Length: 90
Image 1 (cartoon, rainbow, N blue to C red):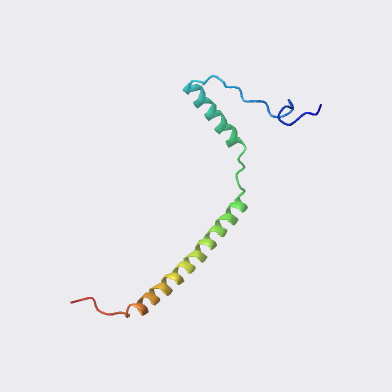
Image 2: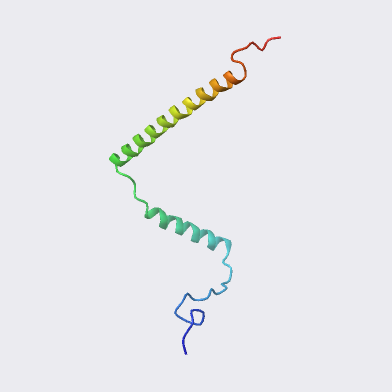
């Protein structure tokens, strides 16, 4: 007989319903997992940090130029469509 994937015992084991741990045990586990993940973090070198900062500043400057040009363009278009710089005083 051939084994199917469902009947094979080599696959992932079925989840067992474990007893729910206390709130303090879950918090302690959470904190241990956070500390374990923070140990994996690698801080950038000074050269990398300066490079990343320059990239962000250049990107922000480019976005400022694009948004400013769009603002001027839309403002001019709205002024042209609605009659320019007419007075609103009655």
